[in-house]
Amino acid sequence: MITRTIDRNFANMRLDRFLRKAFPEESLSVFFAVIRKKKVRVNGVVGKANQMLVEGDVVNIYENFKSVSEDDKKGESLPLASAAEAAPATPSSGDTQQHPDAKSATGFAKKKSTWGQVRTGAEKQAHWGAHELDLIVQTEDYVVVNKPSGLASQPGSGTRPGESLVEYLWEWGRNEGLDFKPTIAHRLDQETSGMIIAALHGDTLRDFTRMIREHVVDKFYFALVKGNLKKDRGTINESLLRTDSAKGSKMLVGQDDDNAQKAITHYRVKQHYEGYDLVKIKLETGRMHQIRAHFASIGHPLLGDTRYGDFALNREVKKQFGLNRLFLHSCRLEFDWKGEHKVFDCPLPKELRDVIKQLKPIHYERPENNFQKSHRR
Image (cartoon, rainbow, N blue to C red):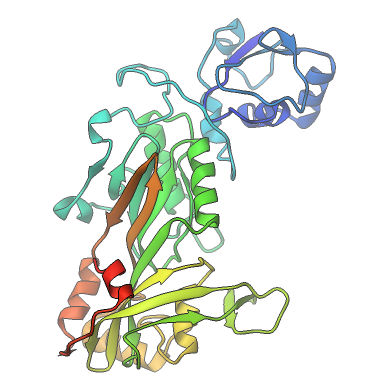
């Protein structure tokens, strides 16, 4: 017999889905068979495939799966270590806090002294890799990571195995003793740097996914664009249509197509420079390449953009200012969490600050307005 106690990562999940996630090496036919033969009981009662599990439920499986160790077959109530290998896209919940020295997985980082700690200064210049993530903040529910330009958010074509933010987070989670694979709640383009939220529990991931879908997570960016914008603040409200080709995906702006998606970008100029503007951007929607495609569509492409940008200008600024990447950085996140308003800031990385230092500012007095008052940081 195999015994499992449901934790927060598997709560509110169907029994059949739980079995697939907890024992990924077994075939579907095995799960169907044990349920049909009434060999699975939940709290002592015969389980049904569509039964919803809750935290604390005890699942007894009267079958010895080949993928389960002999220790697990003795009927002990063990943490779901296999959950860390399942990485669901929209998983579930549950967890019990234990002492940091406890051997079994707790579902959150054991080093409680670091919870809620905002890292600044030299700590944000950490060497990148699986063992040294640049964490802006770490809580028991989530972490906010500062992703460098050039690092893919998740595995995919063109990314070498083990060299994406998600995979670094998985290894970090294993080192921290988590029983859930840390999962990012949103993405940044590989060329974009800055903050990404990663959930440490299934229920946390569901909450952030819902919050982002409902546009209650405010995301701000810094970008350096070609030329000087006519208005100090404005909104780009143009639909985006994704197209795919051998050269990669690209977004077309303002297409009259049923598949086009609504996209809204708010911006204000932080500083005019000779030939360039530094803008702070707030996304109302979060489409792929939204900022890059929107600003290119109004004649002000981002510097260093190899897909939508001015390629001749990119070569010039690379030679003149040493800009070897896209000038786009996720600088602020704001959201409400458990009754508290959270604000996290991440300043421009050194390579982008070095570019700004070489530009010639145009000084002027900008009049006050409501947008500036509400977004002056």
